[in-house]
Image 1 (cartoon, helix red, strand yellow):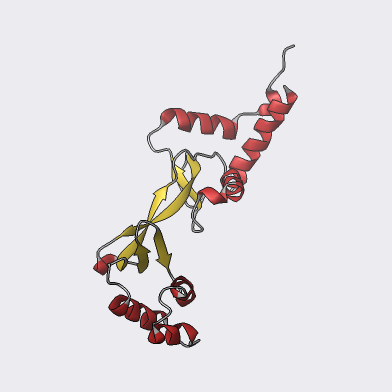
Image 2 (image 1 turned 135 degrees about the horizontal axis):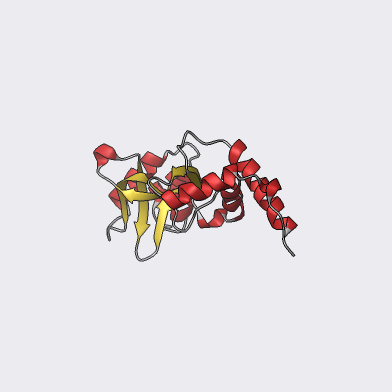
Length: 177
């Protein structure tokens, strides 16, 4: 039982001293993550370039596109020149690909936006616990994922519980055996 009391005392200290991330009490932490979504070009953050014949392959860099096209067509001297030239830009190679290699329409592009969302099933009393969760489970999240403070707005039981955890004098607890 002493271990449980010590846990509550340590939790109380952490709750009282942690950064609140400018969030009103009662606060808790979650994980904010991002997913790339198609968008209207006027509102897009970026453009996704891809090849889709059932296997969806995305390209961000000229080296990714070159690597994909290496085995494309050995009789295409112009393509080979693009692949061999270290100064080939993504835009130049993409334009050539669309104009000359896209007979079946597998290459395409779409404006996209990174849409934020609160990762489901994430709720932490402390920011440190949320950070640790993200470190240990990073493979479930995008590289942009981060901790995110939230307020349990109009949740009186949560507010009372957090208040008790923050204000109770745990040294006054007597353990009955």
